[in-house]
Figure 1 (tube, rainbow, N blue to C red):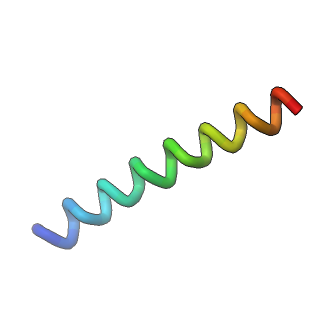
Figure 2: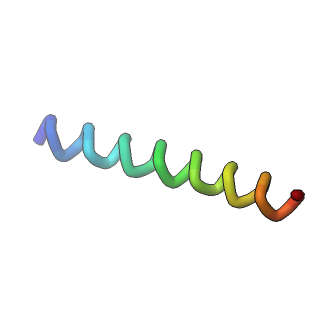
Length: 28
């Protein structure tokens, strides 16, 4: 269960960072 929770947090973090990158690329 602990591993699953960590995986979920990592997924959310990656999703948030990818969204930020997408916004930056769109602005450029």
